[in-house]
Picture 1 (cartoon, one colour):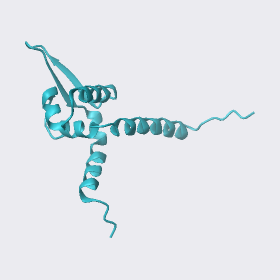
Picture 2 (cartoon, one colour):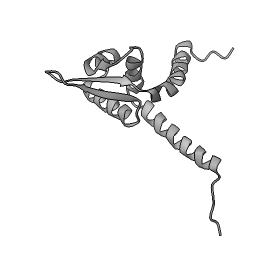
Picture 3 (tube, rainbow, N blue to C red):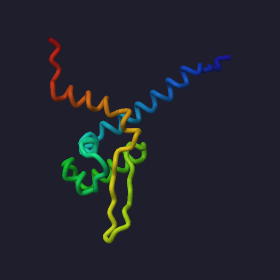
Picture 4 (cartoon, rainbow, N blue to C red):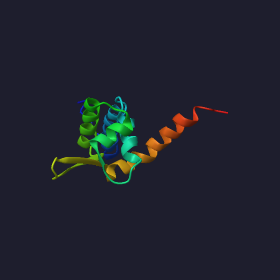
Length: 116
């Protein structure tokens, strides 16, 4: 008695809910939106130093944020074999699914909360 079986819809809803919660935890971290904005305003890839300058983020925080974004496949990291070695980052197709949401949040932040 008491064994609960989830419907297919409930299972999908649970997975989606967990994925959204993970994304919100990551996006709410310090400087995360700054990093995404820096990457999102450029076509192509950016080097670490370019992201750092555009996002006004210190090296330690930027390293963490880039690793977190790479872990959830929002960005890709490409090591270029040069001397000295160069690392470039760019947004992935996965980011395109949340880009309109982030643009809406930016618009909301710029426009305020006028309810009239």
